[in-house]
Amino acid sequence: MAKPENVVLSADLKPEDHLRRGSAGVAESMKLLKSYQSMHVPYTQDAPLMTEDMHEERLQAVEAFGDSFDFSAQLEKEILSSDMSAFKAANPDAVFEDFIRWHSPGDWENGIEGSESSKSFAEDNWPPQGRLSKRMSEQGNMWRNIWNDAHALPASEQKPLLDPNREGEKILHYLETVRPHQLLEQMVCTAFRASADTLNQTSYGDLKQMATKMDQLYLTIASVLKSLQANCFSPGSEIIEDLRQLSGVFEHVEKLLTLAASLHRKFLQAPRLSEAIFSDCYNFYLPRMGTASASGNVQKEFDKKQEVRVRERSVVSNMFTHPTANQSWRKVLSMGNLLNGHEPILREIIFLMRDGVKGNHYASRTSGLHLQEIETYRMYICGTSNDLRVALSVTSCD
Figure 1 (tube, rainbow, N blue to C red):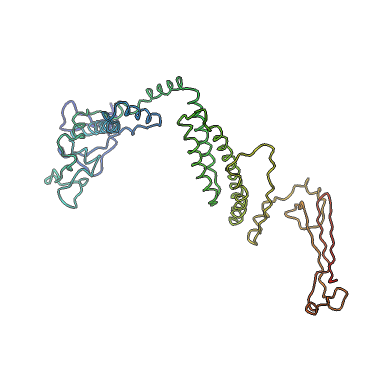
Figure 2 (cartoon, rainbow, N blue to C red):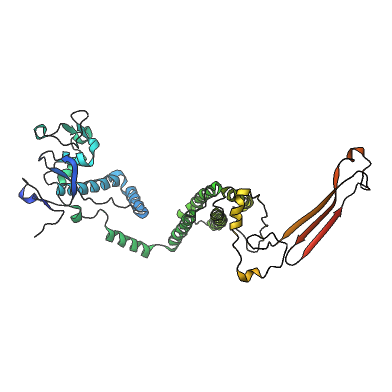
């Protein structure tokens, strides 16, 4: 019958330790000090996760017991004991020094300068010259005590460092006993943070003002929710008003981010234009960034214009797709100058005429103006699909 892959027979071992268990493979160029056998790397347990509520639980225990119990040392001891048990199972004839050479190479000092403990040695030079560090050689060293108490047991047979069933039962008990205002506090804090993280995943290019505003949003959220997490619900508390203002700030940041993402996508080949447009919009919205938008308030129209350079014109032109056959027959203006077949919603045309002032009735009596020209006629035409406005001005030197 075939043996399991992680079980290997080892020679010259005690009868009760004749099986190698939990080996992940041979450690390259490393040998065991006593038996000169190849060292095997064991499968080990992952370090336990530490959730926020578990951290709070341990802090409360520290406050209750004072300095009589060190949770950090206890957690380190549990992890070390697990690793040592797995190492013993994978290397039945290993000694404490072998574990140190594998787990903490910095605590193994080579006897010959320039040599490495991980290198293979000839049998006549075995064991290699080396020793434990001063820290590991001290009397009553915690690591050695843990090694002496650890049993050879692969990670698959060990008690889990994190008991999921126990932690799950604690979570269910917490949900059964949590107070409504505490649950609401956690839901509000989680909702704001999750929403901010969702916004932060949006791609908006190299718009530094938007990046700064996102950083400020996180700081604002942390500042406002700090009092909420502390359960500061005194009669004079302003937490409700603070949350209302935070929602207003969040609303404005979301609008800016929507604009930034849209500009970045549409002007990907014209970054200067997207940065210029966003900068103007940012300066327009900045004064109202700290207040919530009231229903019914009409926002002032943003009508800042930007110059489109020659290399950027094709980018702007490509934003206007060609009209369909059903849209083409609706053309009501026939003055030309179409943009990919689209009629403009407004046309502005200016006609002007310049005349010399010498020798006609527009002439000035001042001799210095005899050789100059003035705009004697200026006509302004503004046309849309619904109306046409014309204005004429005549200028003279009377």
